[in-house]
Image (cartoon, rainbow, N blue to C red; front, side, top):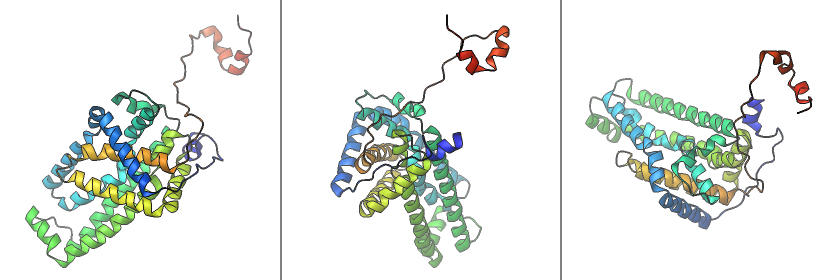
Amino acid sequence: MPNVHVITGAGESQAHPIVRKITFADLKDAVTKGVDDFWAMPTQVIFLVVIYPLVGVFLARLTFGYGVMPLLFPLAAGFALIGPFAAIGLYEMSRQRELGVDVTWKHAFGLLRCPSLDAIFALGMLLMVVFLVWLAVAQSLYQSLFGYGSPESIEQFLRDIFTTRAGWALIIVGNGIGFLFAVFVLSISVVSFPLLLDRDVGAIVAMQTSVSVVLRNPLMMALWGLFVAVALAIGSLPIFVGLAVVLPVLAHSTWHLYRKVVEPDSSPRHERHRRPKEGRRYAADFPAILFPRAHEDEPKE
C-alpha cells in the first residue's frame, strides 16, 4: 500500500543503514567537495537557487509593508528548518556527478524517478509543519512580551528590542526556543533526504538513521549545525542574496557528509519508471479485459 511505502520503503522490515564515526577531517573534506561541486556546476546551481533570495526579498517587503516586522527574523531563521527539503534537487545533482554523469541543471529533476519520492514529499511536509509551528511560537512570544500592537517604525522596533528588558527577554528566550527547533530538525534530517534519494528505505528509517548519525557523532554534528547556522547568517546579511552561493555549497556538502557518515549500499538505486502505454482495446475485448490474468495465459501468435 502507498501509505506503508512512505513509512517503510521497499519492505516492512527494512534493514537500517550502517552509521560510521567521523572526524573533523571528514567534515572539512565534505565541505571541500561541496565547494568543488558548486564550482563545477555554478550556472545551473545559481539558476536553481535564485528563487530563494527572491523569496527572501519578497518576505522582507511583505514584513515591512504590512506591519509584521517582528516576524522578519523568525522568517529568515526558518530557512534552516526547511533548507534540507529545499535543497533536494542539488543533492541529486551531486549524486549524479558522483556517478560520472556530465551534469546539467536538468539532472536535478532526476529525483522524480526516485522510488522514495513519496517519502521525500512526506518528510518535506513535516519540515514545513515544523516551520509553521516555529513562526506561530515566535509570534506568540513577541505578543506575550509586547502586546498585540505593531511597531510604528523600524527605529521603534529596534529600540524596543535592544533597549528594554522585554526586548532582551525576547532575544534570549526566542533564540533558546529557536535552538531547540534547529536541534530537532538537524536530528531528523541531517542525512534523511540524501538517504531517501540513494535508497528506498522509507521516511521512518531515514529519520531513525539521521538520529543515529547525531547520537554517534554528537560533537561533529554540533560543529556541522554551527557551520550551517553561521553560513546561513552570512548569506542572509546582504538582503538574502548571499544565499545564492551559501545554499548550494551547503547542499552539495550535505550530500558528501552523507557519504562520509553512512556506509554505502552495494545495490544500485532502482529508478521509478512510467508505466508503458497499453495497446488499443476494442469493444469485443470487453469481457476479457476484466480478467487480465486469464488474458495473459492466452497463447501469443
